[in-house]
Amino acid sequence: MTTTKNRNACKIALATALATSMTAGTAQAQLAGHNVILVHGFQQEDLATPPANLQAIKDAGEDYWQTFWLSRSEARIDWPSDGRVEGTIAQRAYEQIREISQQGLCDDFCLVVSHSAGDLVTRYLLENQARWLQNEGLPPLKILASIDYSGAGGGTELANLAMSLAYNPTWYNWGLRAAVQVFTGIEPKPSKLGVVNDLQTNAARNLALSPNSIPRLRFVAGGSSYGGITKPFISGKDDGVVPTHSACGATSAQGIDSCSSNLSLAGKVTSQNGPADLYYNHYPVLMNKGASHSGVLGSETGNISVPVVNNTTLNGLQVDFASRSYSQRPWWKLWGSGDQYIEVPGSAQTDMSTLVYTTFNN
Image 1 (cartoon, helix red, strand yellow):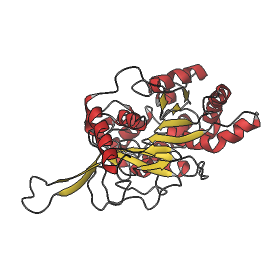
Image 2 (tube, one colour):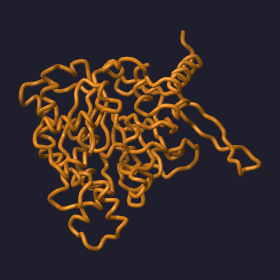
Image 3 (cartoon, one colour):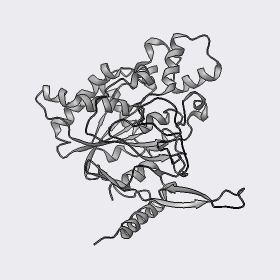
């Protein structure tokens, strides 16, 4: 019989192995025994040069995931960022969903891995894919859960500013204009912003909100992107692109500092401005104060991950990250007890994608 102590020892051993190895060898194109479908995020290049056809969209989608997840997936849903979620994006996505259904890739359930605006696209697809496929006499995709990195399903204030600047280009200061342009990659114009329209906080939060049975596992970053120039324009804590209120799955677009009311992004046990409530079936699993918006996809190490929702099973998927509590006293504090922290041991020596992949496959 396996004791709790032995289970914890196994989890600590896994974390230690992560610290010394980056998953060498040929990758298994499954996660927790299930095929993986990738849904990428916003691609600003599409605004400057709209993709000519589905093949161009697929080529860009393949490039998006090269760092880690491409070789660990069986399918992708690629979409054009110059389109709208309920328009061209849905049309292009359905062409690929239909192919996935015809191939039977999700007959034994699939896991979706999304990033950034892919979170919003995924939410729309999860709400509609069964009806679309059944209308053609095809079986709906059986989805076990969605793993959402830096999820923009709640929108971002950068999209709000981009749309405002597009319609009122004269009165904004240099810093704001620079932040918007590094986000969109273009000088904003009303007819050129595509999915940025849908990423406005109010627009995103009014799209495909019907509750469903598919858990959304949230992986949240708090580092910098674009040299930090976007941070002053995003509410609460953020990863340089997506605010924490969106990445955590909070029901309100008000700025927050953490996915938890008693645990900071850095793992300090202390009172926090956390979400008042979360969307149904949304679970903040890991937070990482230092990881950047794109770094969560496998390119960054040196940042500590912090478990929030842990040691549980969601729709049959075990969420079982190693966890360590410790006390740390600041150098300037000469007396009294130290501050309490919680972390995934060894997480600073790997990246969030490797950590997630290895843990779920354990």
